[in-house]
Amino acid sequence: MILSLWQYSRGYIRLRITGFSVERFLNMAAYRGVYIWDVERVPEGVHISVSIKGFRRLKGCSRKTKCRTKIIGKKGLPFVIHRYRKRKLLLGGILFFVLMMFALSSFIWRVEIVGGEEVAHETILAFLDEQGLRIGAFKHRIDARSLTRELLNEFPNLSWADIHTRGTRTTVMIAESLPQQPIIDRQTPAHIVAAHDGLITGIATSSGTPLVRQNDVVRQGEMLVSGIIELGVDTGNPSTMYVHAYAEVWARRYHPIEFAIPFSYTEKVYTERTTTRRSLELLFAGNMRINFPRGGISFESYDRMTSHHQPGVGGDYPLPFIMITETYKEFIPEERTRTLDEAKELAERILTNRILREFDFGIDIIGRQVNLFEAADALHVQALITTHERIDKQIPIN
Image 1 (cartoon, rainbow, N blue to C red):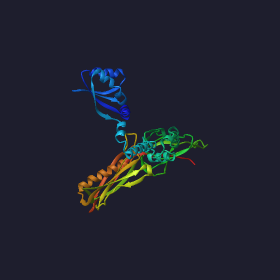
Image 2 (image 1 turned 90 degrees about the vertical axis):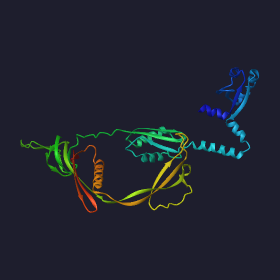
Image 3 (image 1 turned 90 degrees about the horizontal axis):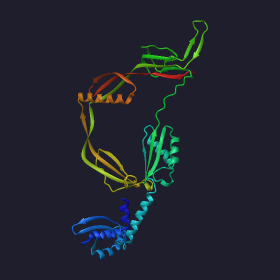
Image 4 (image 1 turned 135 degrees about the horizontal axis):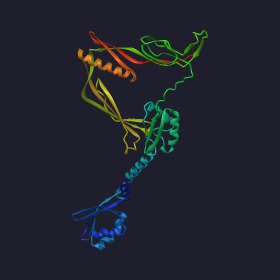
């Protein structure tokens, strides 16, 4: 591709060579140092491409080999300039466009964050904006190494970061550290209390004095294992020792969930009618927005969908503007009625989604009791979810 651009910038000529000594003509041209490419055999002879300078050196070859040469095409920038030499305004516009594109390519028009889940990308972009890495920044003033160091210092949970700029696109690649395991301070005296209400199903104590047993019902905040140990009570020489209580306390917990499924509901019925509005956001002009001519919206009910597209030259040269397309899709609200079976099926889906959303993966769900009550206007759902989980929580002894 680079060679083709170089040949186009210098200009070249496409020739047809005819005669009985075409091979001798090509050998003589090669002997004189004339660079020839795109050699193509045709019924009447050979087609070749040669530069303007090489074309002048082929005159002697034609005379000595008695071959005839005919120009079948002139291509390249010099011929284009010669063709439009009298149209100075057009040439000035082309030159201005080239210089403008060269100037705009010296700025950053897109910043992307790749990787990371815990730290929001918006937070990282806001920090980089404070440090000078933003849309419209002069890319040659960006110190990627220093900016990477500042990024790692600002966000301690990032283990690695890399900032590189290609064309007008800057990519920030990050990797987060593995979650640190909690460090248990065995020297600080502590009690163990209940983090939640529950029915004790098992307790394994490593240190401390257990105050509850299996099948005891406890409330949130109630002490389960004491970090105070009384010694020497039987010998008549009592003493007190403070320890860091540690135990695994498992309990059965109950979680009620209630909601209702109405039998009557409104459904959106979409029609074929749509309206599209387009606008252009200029990044190099302070995000100025230009709205293209558009008519009004005659829909009473509609949904709006917005899409953003930043065109570019290749993947690394996004242009400094964004095409915004807003599509308005008409719908007609219609009143519908669910049957009892449809309401039960929807209730099952809602209950399953709530369980997946509200309970951690480390919690064992050991039971699910669901009661359905049919009313005149809705199906009422009362569910009781039974879980088995740890409820121990350490608190320091004051």
